[in-house]
Length: 232
Figure 1 (cartoon, rainbow, N blue to C red):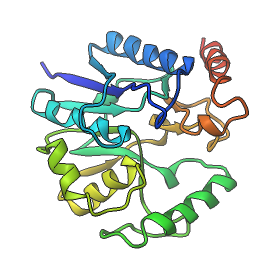
Figure 2: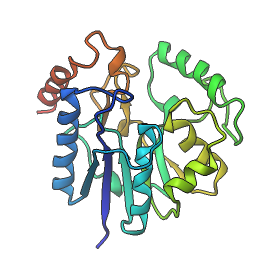
Figure 3: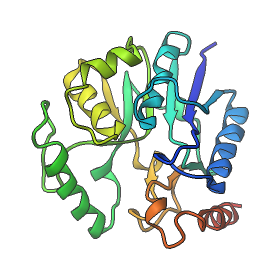
């Protein structure tokens, strides 16, 4: 019988977030999802690596020799009732949602074009540039399988890259410069709230810009209640 794991980070740190109630709501949705599909669930609540807290998700990597697949999932992701078992997807060694493949608003498309130029233009790898910028994925939802990688070895290998505390840059660079079988996840697995107008089809809703919302994320609990009511 195959074994699957969802790994999350929920560290109360000023560098990440304060005490936001919606994190507990999101993590609870993951717990219920795991219980329904028979998936193991780990929530790490303290720093282990000594780098920026964003990189703590690397602590999921050693579990790849104990599980057939591991989903590294940000704590600001809410799982809706529409979501099937993500581990049934064809995910190769590494799978994630490419941001430019989402049905984004014009404003956010413009944002990722500028972001692409700033972050990825100078980095190694084939970024498959098009009119919407580089082919990069959002690191909030990543499925890994059959990879041998050590967290500290990963950090040492990319320590020369200026990532501004963002794990996403290094994960993307890792995929682009490694011989990994990368698969594109359907956009519904990582619907970026505020960047996608219609979230009604979402499997996972990612509140990645909560700090830019009018109430700094405090309104998300009500938004989630509306999502739950909509899918009843």
